[in-house]
Image (cartoon, rainbow, N blue to C red):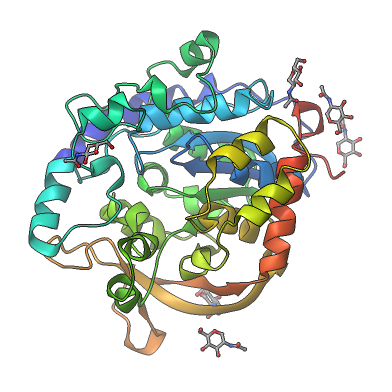
Length: 386
Ligand SMILES: *[C@@H]1O[C@H](CO)[C@@H](O)[C@H](O)[C@H]1NC(C)=O
Ligand SMILES: *[C@@H]1O[C@H](CO)[C@@H](O)[C@H](O)[C@H]1NC(C)=O
Ligand SMILES: *[C@@H]1O[C@H](CO)[C@@H](O)[C@H](O)[C@H]1NC(C)=O
Ligand SMILES: *[C@@H]1O[C@H](CO)[C@@H](O)[C@H](O)[C@H]1NC(C)=O
Ligand SMILES: *[C@@H]1O[C@H](CO)[C@@H](O)[C@H](O)[C@H]1NC(C)=O
Ligand SMILES: *[C@@H]1O[C@H](CO)[C@@H](O)[C@H](O)[C@H]1NC(C)=O
């Protein structure tokens, strides 16, 4: 039943797709590379779009989803991190769906009561007024559109930009329009929940096949032992929150006919941030390198950066496997929202094959991150090969 609540806004959005202005671009250049990055943007989460820009991609827009925190706060982080690099005049933030297809904080917390807690619960962590007062991004609670200004280490976006976001929930409509405008040329990057991608798939049966590919951060496989033989942080690193926030959306996205679906799952844990590397990046000073130096930290792997690097430069891949993939959407299952792999001879119907990256060239990833952050593109050089 919950799904029907999306029907009205989607139809409305579909009828106003022309609201997205025609780009001032050379649309005849068939070699042009376009990307839409859908993510749960955060204060130090800007590196994926800098990597895409550095590789000469035209970033058509950032879409916001609910995963680490609620969508509206995410959209504002997207705006703020574009604005700090003078990129907000050429890259729009397109708000996505605030709610997953079916999941809610209550439903998620009830699942945890049966199957155990996740170390990182993202937007569905219990509401904590103290944490929000201290500057944590909002979780659960009564109003998913509330804004915690104290969480904006990158600075709060300007009022004009916030006005521009409007009230529309239009990321899925935006994605659909863009793949029709540039068929076969638009990569869809998903670093958070798959809600908007799934909505686009269901809105338009041509959407997935018209995109160039779908590259996903998430989709861990066979990590149960790693979840229990280390610290709570190690459990965090091996829990699939991006998919678990919206398991049904992940299933829709991963069974759609994108020409290629590429997973940065287990491999996303390969390269972990270190102080030495942060020091090295900060040898060149600009607002992005400063924020990375001060706020990226040295606890987490370069998850979203790994997915972005794989998307823009597949030569970074040193080992990959192909298999057919499904998502566990049985609410009563302890692996609800996790992927399951099959070989073709034994799989159930309705699945498709995906490219699953097992390892990457770590040095190359660091080089790409460093160059993207130290010498960020600006609007005049977006889409150019420098
Ligand atoms: C468009 O792209 C083509 C092919 O790259 C190029 O020849 C042409 O000059 C471009 N036109 C503009 C207006 O940039
Ligand atoms: C953004 O533009 C302002 C004003 O032109 C300039 O001072 C600032 O250095 C620019 N920031 C970046 C990151 O390019
Ligand atoms: C709420 O957040 C505060 C500040 O981070 C923390 O000390 C406290 O343990 C949290 N409360 C719960 C119930 O998690
Ligand atoms: C590639 O990775 C798979 C899975 O980890 C492993 O079984 C295989 O041996 C690797 N292949 C090479 C050539 O390293
Ligand atoms: C994946 O599936 C497509 C479409 O059925 C097929 O063309 C392709 O060869 C498959 N790739 C692999 C590596 O099995
Ligand atoms: C954009 O970047 C290019 C290359 O670094 C530089 O030459 C140019 O001055 C920059 N333009 C603006 C408006 O900052």
